[in-house]
Image (cartoon, rainbow, N blue to C red; front, top):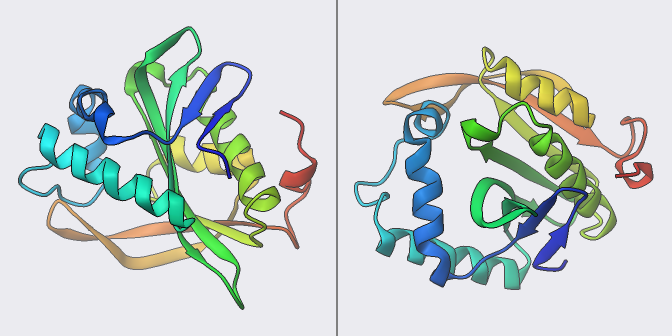
Amino acid sequence: MLFAYETERLLLKIIKPDQADAVLDFYMRDKELFEKFEPDRMPNFYTRQFQRQMLLFEYNMAVQGTLFRFYVYEKEHPERIIGTICVHHITRGFSEQCEVGYKFSSAYHHRGYATESLRFIMDLVFRDLKLHRAMAWALPDNTASIRLLERVGFVYEGICHDYMMLNQKWRDHAQFCICLLYTSPSPRDRSL
């Protein structure tokens, strides 16, 4: 897998620690939005040093092939992060699967960027990583995220009760998957 890709309108890149300020800006712009859907932050999460450490960790994991976090940029504005998509918990052997997560700045919602990015990443998951199955979770009332997953071809599998702690409360999540056996059309055959 490469560390930088282009889609029709976007750039997707795995970045290094020297981009910590841009990542911190991305998180700060939509702090309240992101915190509604993600586990409680570490006390120093909103610092340059923490983001540098995370970027170094993510870069090293990408080199090892165990986690790939792509930061998303508009081609017309390649200096500003608008979103991120992460392929993580990659399991080899009997299951050949991964988990996928994503988030996009609210200023860039409803432009098709998340759909364009996620379709592209799913193609990489099946074609380049040669995985068989990918999973994603969404809060049951997060209709925007659920619609995105369904648009890309994910199938609803059920509710995972008390799946994740958000704001110090265990929350149920809807589980979705996309699998080469029953997903049609195959992500491999999708044109972007």
